Image 1 (cartoon, one colour):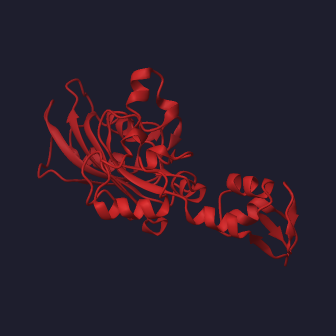
Image 2: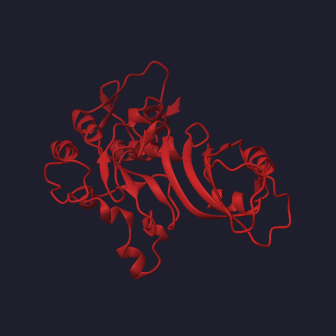
Amino acid sequence: GTHINKVLSELGLCSRREADKLVERGLVLIDGRRAKTGEKVSVGAKVQLQDEAWAEQQSKVNVVLFKPPNWVSQNKDAVTERDRQRLAVRLLTRDNCATETAWNDFARLRPHAKEGPVALKEMACAGRLDFESSGLLIFTQDGRVARTIIEEGGKLEKRYVVEVKRDAGWKGPNVIEWAVSKLRNGISLDGAKLQEADVRVKSQKKGRVAPGETLKLEIVLREGKYRQIRRMCELVGFTVTDLQRVAVGRLTVKGLEEGQWRLFDPREL
């Protein structure tokens, strides 16, 4: 048999962690009886969620925020009181909601959370952005959404617009085409070769980049290592001066200004 939490996860009903909690609360049925924690499900058995569990899953909140620079993505990155005052989740208020329609969508889902998603428990950041970086940041109460973004990151593309400056002391090749080729499929970090990246030059410039000169790139990643783009660019002689994530999968920041948020449907990913 297969563990009940794995069955529920593979059915797309919830994450494994959420499944364990639902089983503990007696909200999961196997062939009409309450499932037990750690129980294995035999082939052909009927697995169901109780109505209460269905309602909870349908009311999970998924938020896309246009994070401004110099805000902290997630709680564990906030090491000082100043950091805690600049947690991005603090921006999820009614005042920062993108439109009245977007607010009404949230109010219908969670009528008692009058301050906004900032007041909700278990709003987890899925796919952090560096403190200095801006752009699309996702908060979710739904473990399925978090897993899609984080654990299955190899399938879900993240698109960034990046401004870089040529390092004054760079001694390596100084041809744009060399740097782009290297970024696409020639960088290793932490002792491992990275997956292929899509990289294109958005600036009109061709040929060489003089020390201190800037260049704008679009980079699409299918993985997410710590400060990956900044470290990649350093290895080809560039310092990142501006980095913005503009899309995760098919979800974009279109229609949002810096600091604004809205709900999104997981199918947008």
